[in-house]
Length: 382
Image (spheres, rainbow, N blue to C red):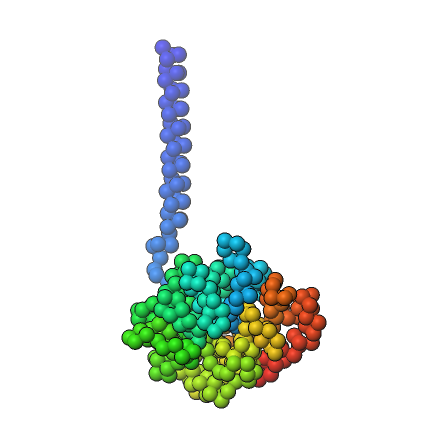
């Protein structure tokens, strides 16, 4: 009987110990849960920006004409396809450095099914776009004088392919809704809107009732779009096809139009069409903003040679967005230009290379020419 009583007592003590242990653990779990959600019982807290500033900075850059002459696409031919990646390999690191990079896609990317062609009516392989994406291009401008070289079908083929590889584009469109849709890239909380217009299409008429196919310079239309873009973006960039071919300084018409665009609200103007470089300049808009204008970015890759037609480059500018209790501020600063050179040997082995390094590709005047171009492009910056 004593043995049984002792045994029963042992069992009771063991049960008590287990129960106590479980209660102890549950207590601490309950206590931990309460601490974890204790903040939910506090009154809502309002955070003030007074005395604080939130700042983000990005670099936006542009390269000039992607103009694919026949000897360029023949050099990129690989039997069953075209590969343009090697052309941009020497400057890929440079092109990948900016947060956002835009390019002027001068020749229509209609693809081989439409028949490839060169000057005076261009049609280039789709694979050009793949190489641009691989090298760091984020968006292309397609409003230029060659936009209708393959007609409406060329624009549709180009658009379909660019959409299929996820490369944004602006300047030529498939319908009115497409034309009215703003192209805005958001990087680190800074929204950049891209617009694009051309002076014309080499005399090829825009089909009746289809003005949406290509953005032709129209001040009323540009003003409306710039103002609309400013309501949705922090910075408005205008890519514009203008000026005289092979002229190294802007015309008075270019300068006057640049002032108009600045006054309407454009923040950066990237020019193309002359096929040679034209200087950079700060324009003061009527509201006091500093507007960076690059009158011409020249050729980045083309089959043109000599007389500065094989020298291009990348223009860049820093965009700083600051937000405090007074609101939002945008500042543009530190404009730079990095010259490039189109190297080739007997119309083969095309490469875009940093101009300062072009000596290794057979350009004996590389260093001196690089210094000349840097001074030329920045001579008007104050």
